[in-house]
Image (cartoon, rainbow, N blue to C red; front, side, top):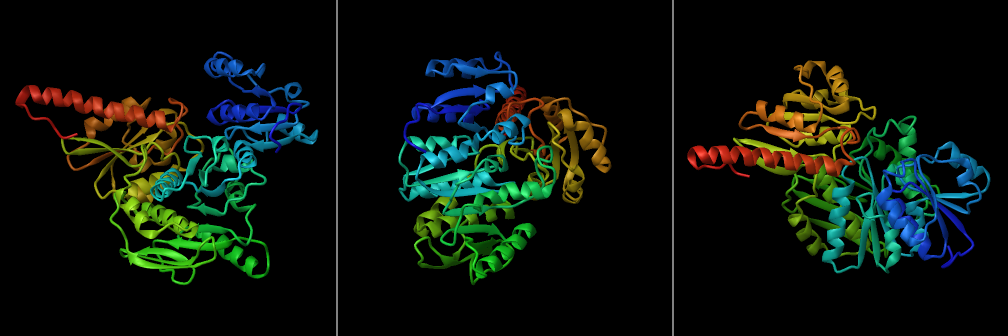
Length: 481
């Protein structure tokens, strides 16, 4: 993509954070930029005011029209917009190039890429990787799906970019070429967007479509689908195909030839670095703050990627020991009267809920619900069997949750998150955990999972504060927060 394109007409579809960042990047390179969003002008007032100040004059709101899309040289689609929209298909047929914001980012930047995807654990692992590179004094961009648009990496010169990528973002890549790609896990998600599991899988595996024999693809061997596909890739590579080096990681099997494992407090790593040097490490695992085998897997994936890149081991282990996770992912919020409150608002699919539930030994009061995107709640039965004290379905999905889990249905229904928490507070007993792991999107009540998690934290702390004041008035003793 050339530095300036004064005669090129670009259209950005979707004015979320990524879309607005794409507009800015295209304007900076001389494009004539138009924007289109299905939301109304009233809903978009703030971002539109900012874009008008930047010189954007072609604006379409309240939908996408064929005439507005016609005659564009480039269309950049935000992650939330399906690439299968009829209006995009017609533009594609007319010869217009259609890409995603991540593809735009890599076309505008020559930064070395480390890219990560998976159904769960993406933000935790990418955040950890970013802290590892920061500790090694490497000038690193960290962004993508976790909040900072990937295209912003083109604004400065970075040594490496660590990108968290959703399946939606990966749908729009073409020339994307990470030197190290990571897939953490694959479980059913976004059934409302993909026709079946194979379509979702294909979107995830676009992360390595542009890789070659000099690159690395790190796969979680403990995920059956990833193990099967990884072994197929290895056979195809051995047969001469131009595929990346497959490196498995596992927290259940010892891998000593080409891979990484974390078993019984011992880490073993055997592979090569990007520069081709032999990489062999064996050492005691560091003490970690995040519970659960899935978090050990995330730690191991980040450590493996950093070592393959060429970072030194000792500072990486110090980062792992200090890392306390990210907000809204099994986040401890507070305690009152012997009950602990945890915020896992990021658990927006069933596999994430299972991982959250399996992280606790205490009985759980589980807040499950939100916007139903077609999840199969029956998959929770086995995990809940020996851990659940009370299930509180809430939000738009409440009835679906109760119907699919009748053995745990005690007749509770909460219209929203606040009502669900109030019910949980009244039912939870000392020694139990109140866990928000909704298994659903937040769109019935909130803009995103972060807003939902923030509201949960506020509600918990308001509840604790009110109880503290009442208790202090009686005997001067305040429960711990």
